[in-house]
Length: 349
Ligand SMILES: [Mn+2]
Image 1 (cartoon, rainbow, N blue to C red):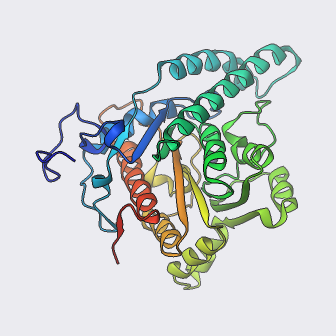
Image 2: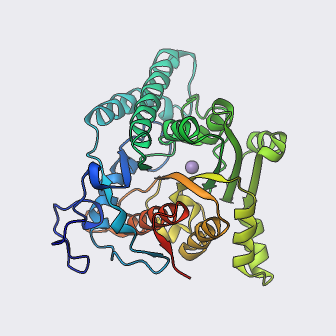
């Protein structure tokens, strides 16, 4: 880090993520923005998530009370890829009539196939981009976009690092075979991960509180490969006075040695993400989510990468930075704990 960078100063509006001066060459962490929300079925805006998080990140103080000076390792966010923006616009135009009709009918077969093909193109792009940086020993974090975006990065991490578990924070199980006909849907991400990435040895879900019967049947049939900590059960344990630290340690213990963290912001209490696409009451508090990440680190597991998705700014009021603000702070925690789990930053007591 250059000697004239002052971590205590306010950052300018044209500085990098978190106000940092790094480029890819001097950053240990490469954040890949993926402005994609083609199959968003309810509230829109997640394609503006990376931009909102980047803007809000410049207000985050760099000293962290959990992980000492994560910024010293270097953090950069890549420029938004123009081709992803283009595919997103094309895919949305094709998908909208299907979503408006409440799902794909026979007359939509052509459009549906094109949307799925664009989703495959996106997966291939994310996978190649992630792999390129992993081969340079970078930590890759994907910033969505809707929850379909990390598929390629999880596949790349499994290729590059070997078998791993996915720690999945979400209000939704995301294990539908397809949603409204779309196979690459945000609601199918973990189904696709389990079906298509055999090196994902285990999926540990946290905060789930909106789930359909097909998903219950599917995740139960998966046996030990899927462990779900339903939000209802977490809430009851808290109501009955169980310390959350013990719950967090149990979640961490369910994971294998290598971990990818897939964080859908709607796993948090919707007060922390009011404009996300599909908010559900309940959910984790900010510090509960942080505690789970901390215990994963403390248990000696290695977080190999992460994604943060479904952050959507208030499109009606550009002055409202709340969703981006929470997203940026959570992103900084994800970066910090990932670095600490790899011995590239120090976990504070
Ligand atoms: Mn999700």
